[in-house]
Image (cartoon, rainbow, N blue to C red; front, side, top):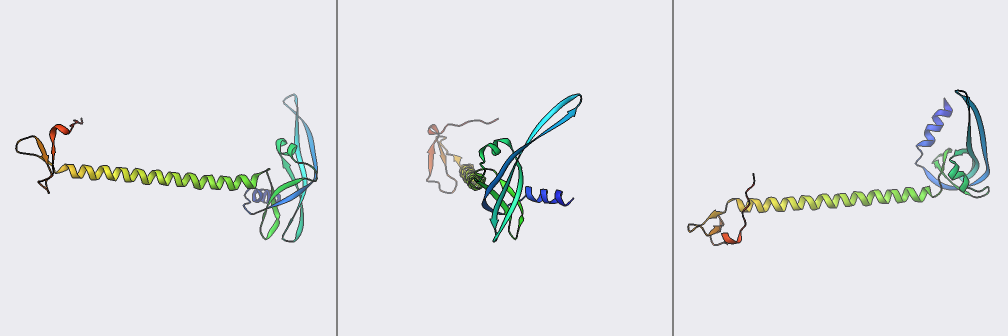
Length: 168
């Protein structure tokens, strides 16, 4: 039960990032008989250590083969740990710290673009609404050749310059 809680905590770590060192790489091969067939599965593991809050912490991680192939014994590996309790930690994929920062920047940039788009759309719709309000009170002149502004009778627009569209 405690191991399950620790694994759940590891999946949700958003703590500090530190660079550790791979102390050992190894794989395990598991054979199992299922429905009359032998199924062979390989799992890939690394032993690693890192220093956090003045102490050296050691751990074992099960990782994907693609990540395992990239790591070297004695080489660097990223680790996220919980501040105040570095024994709760998890391995980071290569370039994970950079990818997380890049992801946050991209998220903020997309959010800013959406906000600009929404504000521009609202502004555009408000301009259309203002223009529609201005045109509502206009009236046809006595001679039938011009539209006259209701508040300012001197402002006029010739009807031959206006293209009227009937909306169904």
